[in-house]
Length: 534
Image (cartoon, rainbow, N blue to C red):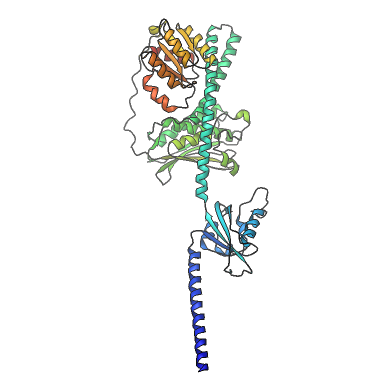
């Protein structure tokens, strides 16, 4: 009996061992399947941080065959850290993560891996101690789960960049408004003085002051182009014609900057579809790129600028401007779209450059890319959406010329200037008095209402600054409540409330952007008093 029982026990033991092996094999197969098919990269690290096993996803992330991943330390694939001479080898945080995981603590880290093709990917790595021994490993092991977060990080950086640019835009817009107020007063005073000056030396000096004020106006206009997003006039546009226009403009820009010997080539394949573009904004964006190219090619042998158009295969048309100038390194390209960033000496920096181009392209629903290499030049790619509408059969007929307005129509009219800048009020009063108008002044809403109600003869026209304490739109409503029939001409160097400005557009007699020339002031006032919008 005992031998039979012993035999049964042996058989039972063998059966249990067999079942255990089957269960372990099934578990191993399940684990292996999860390991092989995981969406994240997985590395099994030994106590020294050497990769003993890796799944296909990790090899894909690193763009390397598995046999070039296994046997190396995971930190060997990290991007170089600041101050280290090799790729991540001196980063003490790497070993801290690994040692903490060996001690049983889950550690999370954000790293950048360098792929076999040289590209970099941002990853999040979860380090955790694992009980299953790895092939060839001795002692405890660590499992590292590697998740690709490159696109998410790019979206986060883009969002932060947009927030930063919007903050800069608001700040720059306010500064531009203040500059335009000052420049408006300077330019108006100088222009009146110039009319009264007959002595040649004094006249030449006043002309220099006026030229400097106009240069300041151009710079603030560049700031305003960056800060505001005016409604685009998107129309079907022929890329070939657009590039021909840019080519003509580029010839003038290069000649003006001392680069007249540069060769300019325009290459546009036939049949390129029309793009949806605001031609003025498109040309402005291209001008900024051409200005950068001019500076990059200055002093270089055989300067050449190439303008090319092509379809990119994804419903967009690519306009590329390429120069053979000095080029930029990767760090400079990374910062090229930052407002006010420049590699030029401070006295040569003249605008917002590629930051303006990026904003123009964003408003178009397109994008901009830069490729550059030191000593090999730069290519700037502007990608536009293909227009859903065909090109018009013929260009629209030019509008009928506006009949000249007689300046004497409103001679002797009373004009109320509402502006919080004393120099603007004094310069306007002097200029308008020269034109034969009676002028009243007010620095805020209360003074404006008081001047309106007490004016004898009544006020015929109000020149109203939009950016005032209490808001220009609110002051407009106050004045209209006192005198519904009074004519109003809006004048401003910048309005942070674009919706309010557009809301007033149909109710005012015109808009006079600061700073303005005397002729612009005279024409705007004359047209406003005659009942036609300026």
